[in-house]
Image (cartoon, rainbow, N blue to C red):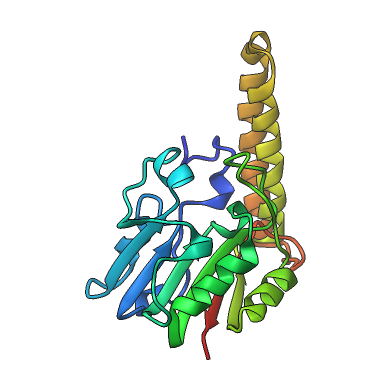
Length: 224
């Protein structure tokens, strides 16, 4: 169902690597690596090191990284990585600025960081979901770690982001309802999700975008 418009996250699409990540070289650290999916999008010759946090990576997702550690206390020397990838992680850490500081610390001068974070998206992995940043908040925090922001990309057209939230709201409410209501709610939810997904997708093709509304951001930053 995940690839059909009956799925509440259809507008979000599958997992997409950040633009330009295919140019990564040398030693690459993946903070919050999960199932290591990003490795398939990196050049074969890079020295890839996957890192995840025991409480969530091991116990929740059964991840198999090379290193289990806290992103706020990376167990590496200064300036040893040519690139750091940290996707959909910053919202789950108690000290986001410290994590960004650590990413900057382990990057070599001239090294590249790719970071992503949801903006409009429901609470997930509760209770380990602590914050959302606007584009300006992300820029501020990255710059506070002495990294230079080169690019911030929005993840979804405004109307697709609005449709995504509507679909997730409907599906989440139906799932949380008493089970005796499911025979009525689930078919209605499926039809509503289908209509919202297709309508939002079509409108996003025909209608102008709005930069103030999106599902998330992807940042490319460089250590000077």
